[in-house]
Length: 499
Ligand code: GUN
Ligand code: FE
Image 1 (cartoon, rainbow, N blue to C red):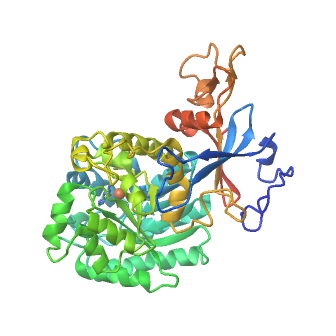
Image 2 (image 1 turned 90 degrees about the vertical axis):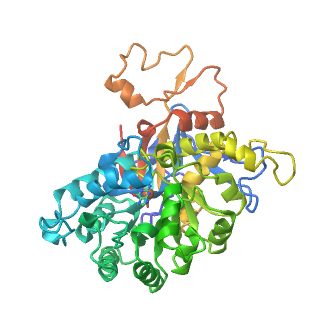
Image 3 (image 1 turned 30 degrees about the vertical axis):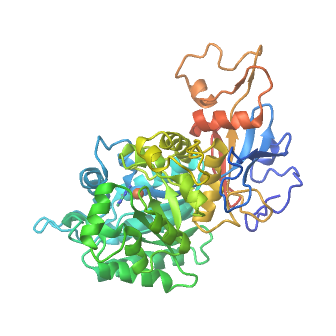
């Protein structure tokens, strides 16, 4: 039922087929619709009813197939810093933690001038190879089948990340982070000039196009790090570069994450109407653009983003960790903007999109209660006042983690579900099963033992034997982790499994 030729779903006849090692797991199969329709009737007042689907693999072991997670925003070279941010906020976090680690992915700076030097491909630090391999292992083990990666500005290391994703079989967009503005960037880690930024970016694009000519697994993404890190000529050329390909290349950047950043953009681009206006001026707001964060966008900016059909990556763990603010996801959805989830490692402290889904739910629950929000939204359009509609439900957060992400990376017809012809980018989730009165495999097992670790944190206990799949899914989202991910496929290829 998955075509070996193209890794797509070709039917649901469930024939025994052990080629890929999963068919035998299916003792029973049926669709379960986890209805994402909440109290408001619709997740998106412009769209149709949305559903998150699971396919049950084993009722006894509470195993089910779920679409692979899509991480629409992650910085691969920041992985060594996961969990390290102290009480910094965005701009000092970049200087204190982020630029130092990212700069290590190329040759050391010139000892005389202190400026970044060109990295010879022969000198590509072993570190890049090792860290990027770990990032791929870790994200796959958390069920991420597709990721939009920021690399550093080093060409050899960026190419190494592309090759690794290609070899390991993770679907990926790979972007060389462009940063040529000496007014913001540090000398030891910045492009020599706008021109050099474009030449180097083109080298990474060509490398990926040679590696994967049809873009079946790995694609380039044009990546101006964010407005403050780029000069006007660099922004201009990057917009032109993306548009010069057919189809035009994807673009990713950050927008409106932190209030000090907003002030900096105003200072550096006094001529612009708004932060979104800077990107729009240089043709960087396109239907294939991923904008990370979007915490503080104005009404006009949101209208512009929608008009250009640019997409938003919501990174709730990072927004909370760096104290950036709470992204008004419900407002974005209601206004018809496409939203997916991002871990934003290492602004975000976890490589797990399940954690991002959980944090999206939590942040949305706090938003309606925040004093400022209450003040500004004391009357909704219907005059009834705030009724907690900011809250995202568990199915809605899972929708964002899968279908939402698929729309953000412009692959809605290929990813995020189990429709005929879609790519088999799937995770097999195991919640485990313990019925009351039966001996649990964990009875008497000391905390921390290997068996307990293997069983995972949910170790599902259905006290009355009446638990619905909706309830099981809630337990998974609130308390699950990578121990519940039994196997992962990308395009039909098994890329991760745990016994
Ligand atoms: N803005 C510019 N660079 C970064 C980054 O690396 N992470 C986050 N979260 N925001 C940024
Ligand atoms: Fe980021």
